[in-house]
Structure formats: C-alpha cells, structure tokens
Image (cartoon, rainbow, N blue to C red; front, side, top):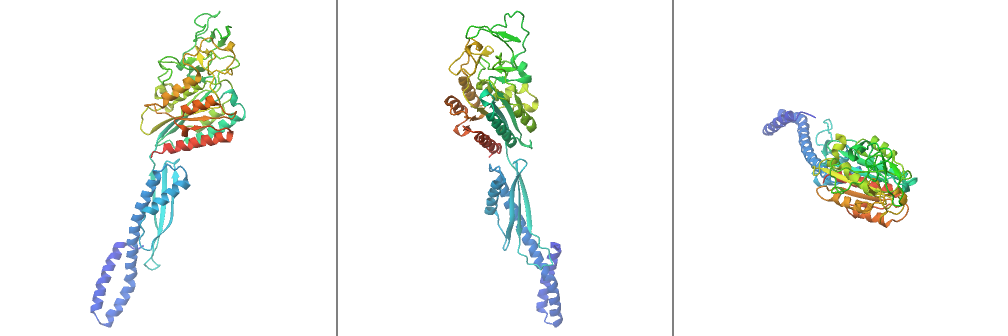
Length: 469
C-alpha cells in the first residue's frame, strides 16, 4: 500500500492540474492532462481505499471488543456457546462501510475458561487498481473474565455398603469432578479441592495428635483414667451389654462436644473426640486430604478409597467444614489453608455424598449406646459404650452442622448426593434434602452412570459460579 501522506499531496496536485487544464485549451495541455490523470487517479483511489480501510478497522475493533466483553460476562463454559454469544453481540454492534463484508469471526475460551479470545475479518470493496494491495481488515481482542476463587470439600462415603461397583463408580465420578473443577491455571483465581473420606469416623492421619491430643501409654493393669475415659493408647469401657471390652486408640476422630460442637471454632481450644474402634468396625484407612490444586495428588488420594465400616455422616460433615474453614487453617500448610470468610471473589463449597442412613455416633471415644439413628449395622451392644451420645444421633448432629455452615458469615454452599443404589432410603433422603443449599443442589442418583452425571452437573455448576457475573 502506498504512503497515504504522499498520496494526499499527489491528489492535491492532481486537483490543481485539472483546474489549470480545464482553463487551458491547447492540445499540449490536453495530452499532459491525460497522462497525469492516468498516473494520479489510481493513487487517489488508493488513498480512498486506505481511508475506508482505516475507518472499517476502527469500527470492527470497537464492535469486537464490545462483543468479547459481552461474551466474557456470560457464564458460558464451552466454546460453541461462547462463540454463539459472541457472534450475536458482534452482529448487533458492527457497522460496515459500504460494500464491506464480514468474512469470518470466532470467539473461544482459553486459560481454563478464564479468558475469551476473539478475532474477526472484513473484506472491503476495492476502488484502486489491482496493482495496489487489497488486504482484508483483521482485528483481534482478548478479555480476562472476572472470576472467583473456589474452595471445595468433597465428603465421600466409604462405608461397607459402598463395596464393589458403587465404590468404583464413586471414584470415577470424583476423578471427573477434579479434572473439571481444578484449573490448570491458578492465576488470577485459584480452584482447590479437599477430600474427606468417612465411614464410622474420619481418619485425621498426620494431624490426629494436633486435633485430638497425644495418647499416653496406658498403665498395666488398666486403671483410671483409661477406663471409660479416652486419652490413653488403650481404653477399657463398660459396654451396653455390661461386658468390659478394651480397644486400642486409632487415628480416627469423632465429634466434639460442648459449646463448639456445631461450630468451626479452632481445634486448639475445642479438640475433637477420640475413637477406640472394635476390630470388626475399624478406623477407615484413607485419611483426609487438605485443599490442593494438584490434580495428581487428588487422583492418587481417590485411588486409595476402600469400603468398610458403619456410617458416621455427621463427622464427615464436620470435617468438610473444617477443611475450608479459616479457623482451621493453622493445621495445614499455607497453600492448603481456607481463606477468611468474606474474602472478595471467594466461594466455599461442600459436596456431601452418602449411600444410606447415618447410624454411628460416639460417647467418650466409643460408639454410643443405640439411639433412634442406630440401626444395628454399627455393631452389637457389646461393642457400644453404655452412655448415649451427648450431642444426639448422627442425623441430628449433621443437620445442626449443615445449618450453621450455611448461615452468615460462613455462607458455605452445600451440594448433596444420595447414591441410592440399594433403593430408597427416607432417612438419608431427608437429611440430604435439609443439608443442601436448596432443592437444586440435591441429587439422588440410583446407578453408577447417574452418579457420574450428578458429579458432572455439580462440576458444571461450580465452573459457572467461578465466573463472576
């Protein structure tokens, strides 16, 4: 393309020459006019092409920027949808100069849906001869979407009824959710997941002594305070049947009691309970995984899940809360600590999954005497302590925790998944419905395929929430 300033000067010379040629009636002037016009006219037309191209470039850039911004403000998380939204906005905003045609445009998501990248091309009508370059007008735009940090605690049922294909389905569903929710790019917004496996309790793993206390070596023969009182490596207690069993301490933990039973107050002032499990209902082998954005770590953790034991769902709920609570942050490495409540652009989420009724609660480190929520699958009376749980049954405790978790300033978003592979369970369905943020956040799949669909739906919803409106 020729230099536009030079063409402008030449066009002015042409105009002056034309005026003189019109006044001059000699043949020489006519010939000179014809020659000069043949040279300068194409340049003048080329200048017009430049002007038209510059004008269209500005109009196209403004329209594409507006369309990309509009698309970025949507909650679309797939390319076909974002492309449709962007192109509709572009068509509504684009002004084409006479004869111009929009030949291509596209809108795509990048950086794990955190950016919208757009490009558009317009072909102009050429007025200058073909010797001049007639390049199309091409522009691009990139918009970083406003977003949210997201902290998710997956609380997963590992009880005996999950053995076999139900556990395989759960592992597959959980791994898919991890891949969908955890972003490969952790800036400018992060996405982290914690995992809390539970059965008859929760295994606190390396953190157990910090949250519960360090056991002392039990004296021999057994004597107070290791009788009907936790704190030793072994505990002897009076069972509901009157027998005096002695069980070893485990890395599992039970509910805490007192004023902080249904809060997320720090463990430092309100330690959790001990667990002395019977041999036929042992401590769950898989321990907690604090918040992380490391997908291999999360996948490896899901691979360790095994089924066994009874169901202390309320303890799983409590630890789901602890994993994302800022009050428990000091327990974990800095990268795994939950943000303070009210932190701008930060969402806290718990996903509670179970396949049946909660049937296990504790009193002084041992499974408590049967109550309305204990159906016998937590063992016989010879394995239960004679005292009842001071906090009530597992359902009652779970409901109290869910209610507190959802209340301001905590504002935890709760999804529930009742995997009813064994048929309807009214008790489980009731607690899941009450714990969920609302009916739209409660799922009741009955097959492994439906379980995966439920987790995919939750992941899709979380990805929409991660994009601030």
